[in-house]
Amino acid sequence: AQKITQTQPGMFVQEKEAVTLDCTYDTSDPSYGLFWYKQPSSGEMIFLIYQGSYDQQNATEGRYSLNFQKARKSANLVISASQLGDSAMYFCAMRDNNYGQNFVFGPGTRLSVLP
Amino acid sequence: DAGVIQSPRHEVTEMGQEVTLRCKPISGHDYLFWYRQTMMRGLELLIYFNNNVPIDDSGMPEDRFSAKMPNASFSTLKIQPSEPRDSAVYFCASSLALSKAKNIQYFGAGTRLSVL
Image 1 (cartoon, rainbow over the protein chains, first blue to last red):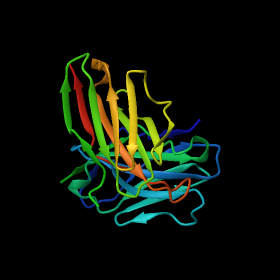
Image 2: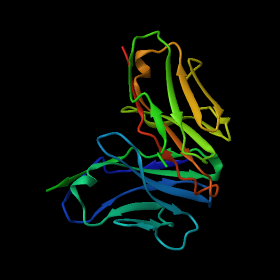
Image 3: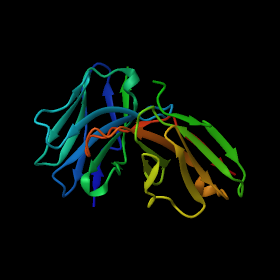
Image 4: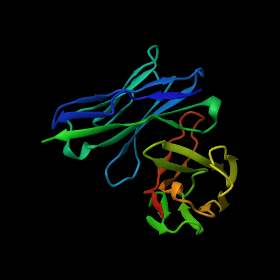
């Protein structure tokens, strides 16, 4: 079965510093996609970044990058130069071919950026 | 594009009443998903449609829940009769499948349902 683990329930980071949010996954399918979403206190789910299992390079989107270590089955999100507006819940999610279009979401990490 | 539009944003109802949640997906997207988010269970997929056809409804909790997608631009999630344990945030999401793996879902703002 698919599984996503996010071991950090909460994280603190100083404004302007970088932070890494951990995500490990489990799948038997060689073809899969990994996704990160941000959920601010207002409640909406915002797509941040995508990494495909066959992608040769780590994904980057502005201040977001994904540290993809396939052998370790980890897909950590790195946020550079943290801003106060980055304070939110962050969810890692995965889809593989075994489960159609079904996403599996991790439990999330609450990030608090300190001024 | 306006993004995925959900209505209402908030719904308060009494136990036993019928509740209908509405969703307008992003134009051109061929997948639509309904999720429920609670503190206890996190984000759970309830059902998803492809080209208006329900594909997987294994996440629908029970017969009190039903979902329809009469056309490409509209879907409803209905709970009848509602119960206090149905209180949650319900999200609708849509996507355009670029590949099996790269199918990025874009979420609506959610409907916060409270059943008293």
